[in-house]
Length: 411
Image (cartoon, rainbow, N blue to C red; front, side):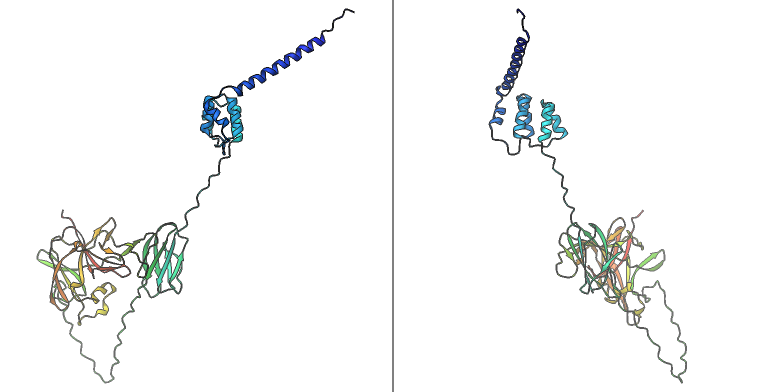
């Protein structure tokens, strides 16, 4: 009758303890989110949601002024507008970001955009316009095709940079030039091919008459002293060399074949047709020195031209210059510019270039016999490279005739 029941009382105490703990947690949570916040945090919470989320600087500022749980709440509410990189993660961690906040930012951060590389520039285009057409085209000594009947061939698979272009056609002299190609640009080369002159006709002996008596052998006339200026010589330019009491006539050689080096700009073209806008080109001679060396001062020269007594059909192409003029007035004496392995004719112009007076040496000449002229310089020559240039005008598509010599520095 007097037994006490303790279990119901213990259950009531436990329920009170649980309710008290739950109430404490609610009060703490309410205190966290209702505690006074900084001005920037309050403005962020009250401001309209950012269209792209919070920036890195905004998150760091919030971490510096508010507790991590509130920053986590704001990040979850507004989102993240920046990409999370290892460097950015270190900055956030230094500002006080917790592992939970970093996990949330990794989840909400936008993915890193894929890097799109710009497309490579288009290759250059080389247009060859050969006159006449159906010519073979070589680039860097590799055949690249044949021009059509209109003379046009377009090449669009060449690499940018310098290239050697050669255009060939049977019966014509080859055309060679260096071109500089830039990505995406179109360069046009006009090649006027010069025909090779036919060989001189062979003279046929007249048929002998049956009753004709053999003619007596003609006396061979002495050729004369080859070192005497009055003795007939093959057409050319000769240096009058004196040594002690003796003297000799030494013929000047024609300079090695000239090379044309051309550089064009965007949209430019070169040649002898419309669209020409003045490319930069040079006439170069192979070799840094002439073979013939003469003493300084005023060397003496003799010019020999064909006459009616000479047989011009025996002269080679190297003497073509002497077929078009009959006096030294058709030549100028040029002071050449020397480089490491070449010499350059100093001329200015576009398709036609001339040598300026400052780069020439004046001379006088005197006729001493038929087709023979004595040439004396008006000024002393110093060390350097020189040459007698036919015509004095350089044509971009024409052959150049220059007879060179040089003067060494005195030892």
